[in-house]
Image 1 (cartoon, rainbow, N blue to C red):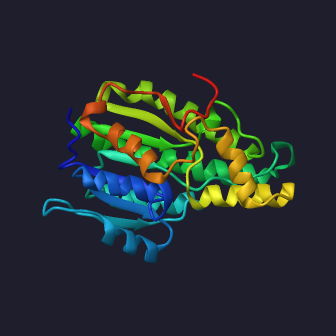
Image 2 (image 1 turned 180 degrees about the vertical axis):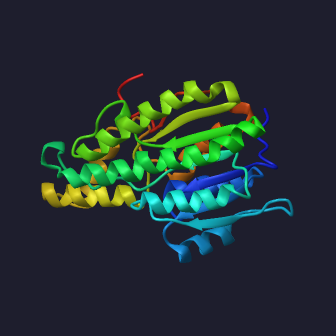
Length: 261
């Protein structure tokens, strides 16, 4: 099985913490040169220092805030002028919780911009290089909500579904060029995002965070929540030559919690 990413260049978004950071570490361990992309430059510098590397690997970072699509467009355009990108991991923090019926118009617009519009801009920038290299892996970290909507995450459910369908459409359009587009769907994973969701549920229900966690774990056949590196392992595999014939799919990494095929 060919898992070697030597000579490949990856951009990993939202890569200073959680699943994004774990994915960057895994890709670097497989030999890829990794460019981190996030808004906090100090955290980007710290994360770059943690990436493994041989003499042939060149790690770096790009500073961009995904709430500003024009900034993302400008930053990635400058990067691809002198760099071909083989792997793009689209990942950014999820929208705040709440019912869909209560969400304000600007909440949908903000989430749609950060998750779908910025993804689109990044893909448009890197695909020409992928075509010329005849190698491309576009991996979107979304949510199991694209299979079964999650209670209390109305805006997130809506936008994640849009990203999943966008990705499926792209997978058909780009497959003839040796480019695959797949989605990784994390379930309950120990990240800052999960902690925030549990805290919100605890406050609304009057329960402790520990009680909320126990109730969540009861729904997971594996009997535990996952960790970021377990999700990152799926991301890294999809980026490799071994995954060349896997295209246009959603892969839940959730301990068996999602109640559908």
